[in-house]
Amino acid sequence: MHLEKLKYTIWAADAERATHFYQTCFGGTVVRQNPHITEIEVAGSLIAIHGGGEGKRTWTGLTFQVADVVAGAAEVVAAGGKCEREPQPEDGEAPHLAMCEDSDGNQIMLSRARS
Image (cartoon, rainbow, N blue to C red; front, side, top):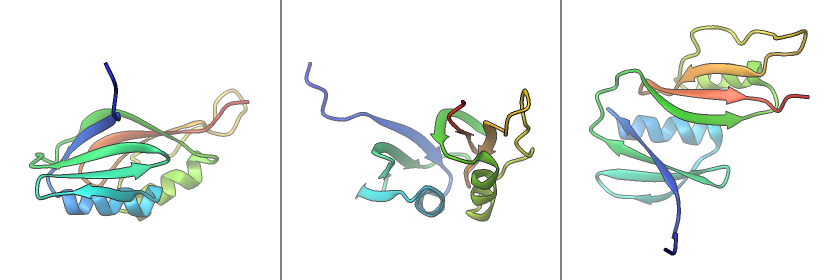
């Protein structure tokens, strides 16, 4: 089998709002768009945002590695997402995980490389 590309699809009640979130927060670039789906490239990976979602909290499994999860969590909130709990230090190290949501309730995780 010849694989052409790999993308991860999420659902959004408001696909335009979700697209704006991933562009604003993660510097995503729209690479394809039609009335039903938007493909956005983020850090060399594709996220497909499909309209018609219910806007409910849904775990996606998407993890975005950043240098500073505290600053990243603040940027998620500034872009219209949520982080219900501040990232916590672990074992005397700076926080390495932040559990957040995009603008449509899709749960995402921020992580940083651990030493």
